[in-house]
Amino acid sequence: MKVYALALGLMASAASIQAAGAETLALYNWGDYINPEILAGFTAETGIEVTLDTYSSNEEMLAKIQAGATGYDIVFPSVHMNDIMLKLGLLEKTDINLSPGFAAIDPANLRSKEDPDSAYCLPYAWGTVGIFYNEKVTGPITGWADYFAAAEKGAKVTLLDDMREVVAVGLIMTGKSVNSTDPADLQGAVDYLLSQKSKVAAFTYDSMSMLTSGDIGAAHFFVGGNVFFTQTPDVKYVIPVEGATMYQENICVLKTAPNKAAAKAFMEFYLRPEIAALNVAQQFNGTANVPARDLVPDFIKQNPTINVPAETLTRLQIFEDLGAGLKLYDRAWNTIRTAQ
Amino acid sequence: MRSLLTLWSLAFFAFIYAPLAVIVAYSFNANPVNMMIWDGFTLDWYRGLFGAAVERPASDALYIENTDQLLAALRTSLTVAFFTTTIATVLGTSLAIALGRGRFVGQKALGGFLLLPMMMPDIVLGIGLLIFFLTLGMQLSLLTIIIGHCTFLISYVFVIVQARLAGLDPALEEASADLGASPFVTLRKVLIPQLAPGILGGALLAFVISMDDLVITYFIAGTDNTTLPVFIFGMIRRGVKPEINAIATLIILSSVVIAGLGLWLRARKTPA
Image (cartoon, rainbow over all chains, first blue to last red):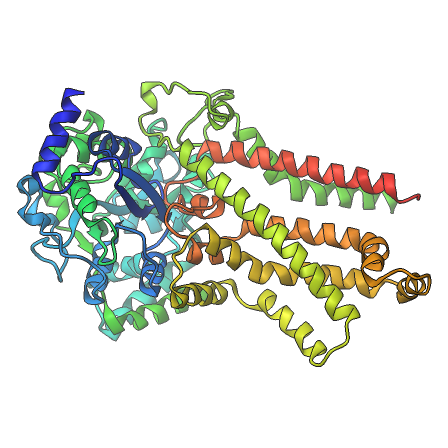
């Protein structure tokens, strides 16, 4: 009780929350992308009721917000979508970078091009996209070359059913940027992928259960897939040596948010290391909160594919908004998917 | 030949029901995160759904507890389905009777227009409805979902009731009028009883489609009106949770009970 009272006092002094109990906060997040304890803790401390609705892709969320749906306070777009939403004028300036807790945020995680100082959004979580493999089936895998070699020897492998992620594999293997809009680069990526396509069993998001059951030997997936393999020592995750993509989502307040003060209070709540660490322990994601990195369970801290060391970071690339260049990717993706 | 046909039917039913059997089996799996690994038998998922507090061992730290949200989504879905079924059945049936028995200009064209919402891709209808509601200045809510569902479910009920109506003999209604019954009495005592199987079929179809709809609902749902399909779809990156299997099993069970009840009622009635 004392803790709550103290916290309430703090919140009030931050000039945000006065009428506790009456306020609500509407989050619009990816499915299962936040530890429910964070929401419960926020409500217990501030008296603000939190509602949570979910979406499954950036585009889905943008379509709804752009069409004019209101009522949501906070969204969690990926960095490139964060930029698009800023250009469209959908986001509210929060000055979260002036909050006292902001010093905890790793400057390397301020990835938005439109919001380089984090005056609008706060880094939420980030992670890598790599290869999960069953070592008994495929032998050790260090990267895409091994992955396709294992496929050649008969192991079934899958790639994500995702345009940018799959084209990125081709771009990485031909030594190009995953954000290239040079038609020649994309042609090279398509040629590479077409030469490998016969070895790929499927393009799917459903690969984690197939990997568990032994239906496939290796799969292209998000680092979060590790939650499924804490009991199966043979299944391992690797960030490909040739290079890989990473993703990051940010916490953004919508221009149309009905409860902007509560939204800012939530961002400040999430700046606390112990709160950010709650998410890491459950999601196996990276966090932008530097002190939080020491508060996560040991098995995560000691796993270099989850708690990524600096030298691995140098081979990661993040997707950027491509503007009109996206059409090239659309065409490349269609070619890859429809080729016999 | 006969044994071949039997084999064929068995294979057919196995094909349809095997996935359902898997869901039922895994709804008793104790593993909270990876449903493909069997960790032993448990009734915890069902107990959680019925509100019993289930103590999770500390080793289950990776399990994301959100049974409350799941139940809220189920409640939203059932509320929406109940109201849309009622409204769509009444409106769809009256439309079918009006177009089948009435006589006015543009009757044929109207019948054609009613098929449009069924043929339109969901995504078009969803965005169209969203823009329509926003233009009217309506806040997205449970009400907009119900209105939105009714727009296309009326067509489904209409089509089924109309098919039944087309097979009826108009002479019965004429006879009823000849015998001095008012149009309302004829409707109540002659027409509706004959249409009943069609109306019931239309209502059931409307209920199922409303419970099932993902794309249209997604666009016209307001904050905190997540329906069950939207909720489950949102889990695509994390994988399906064990409670979903338990809820699916309960839904399968209630479908079997409802369908069985319907068959029993029909079997009891037909000889008369």
